[in-house]
Image (tube, rainbow, N blue to C red; front, side, top):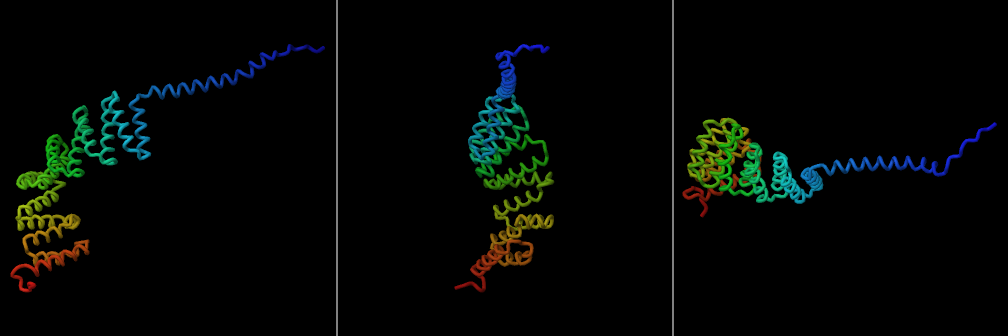
Length: 288
């Protein structure tokens, strides 16, 4: 005898079919909620910073710069705030070359950041912008003189003192430049040859040609490779020329011609010196 099983109602069958779909939809909703919920919990400053990085990858530096400045304004953490601002300064300086904006950004870091290293890097950046990018030597000198006493690393301090000597020379403060060089040479290690090179340049500017040549000779004896790399064989010949010692300049170039890599320029120097020697007053072969 067959036992009749009760037939499943259509309603129950539909419920069983719908449940897995509802379950899947529910789980999907939960995942999406968690994803967007967690994303929305991310601080607004970090979201702006991420957007800025995305724009940098696309090469949209001005948009990225605006985003970085906005992100720094709303960041709660001080280190993050000024890290974002430092990145903004870098973009303004190197990518957009908006130097005035870069200076304004770095000044904010100097005035507001609690991190000593951040402030020092910002001060160094400002001095470099004035010296290298804007070539405003008076402002560069001012900023370098602020920076130098703040440094404790001897190597960095030496480089800054060299820049101070350079800017003093470039602004025509020859006596001050010489004093800076003399003091620095007593303690200089890494930059000694560069200080001697600046000293020679200052002496030439003061028309002390013999003394300048003596400084060039010191550099040559100390490091011939440095001398050649810095093109000082030509520089020394120019000193002879400035002193109207054209024959001596030619003899100097003859002596060191093998060490001068730019043969085309060397040939031009020869021609110039020969021409000037011929036209020099009281020269035997002077043209009529």
